[in-house]
Length: 128
Image (cartoon, rainbow, N blue to C red; front, top):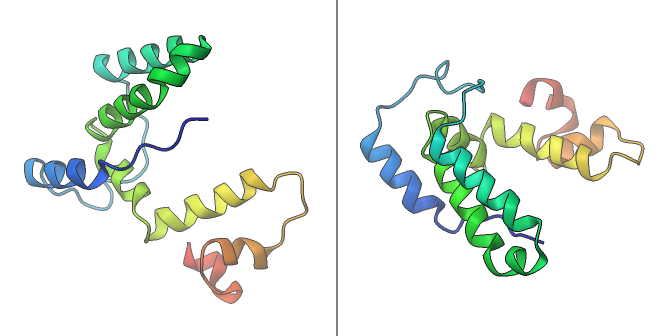
């Protein structure tokens, strides 16, 4: 199983913040963007490696890190940084979605979902 390669996150974020203009809230919303050539090639290399057990074990994590690297440097990188942040609205939504994904076969309730977003049940609909 490949781990999430975020150990270079702060280096990339610092570089991104120092070289890119600050975006407004509306510009940093989730949007659909075409995949650039470098990201597409990195994804292709990862998919090829995952088809072979040895390549997946030896190269998988590095190739996954390459995909994340190019995704973070893409036109939508600012949005991805926002989503990767451990606080904020996008992080709370991501936590709820992850909880739903992990527990899809179990009955879920608002209290559990609010807890997964680290907010009180009363504020759940408005807090995310």
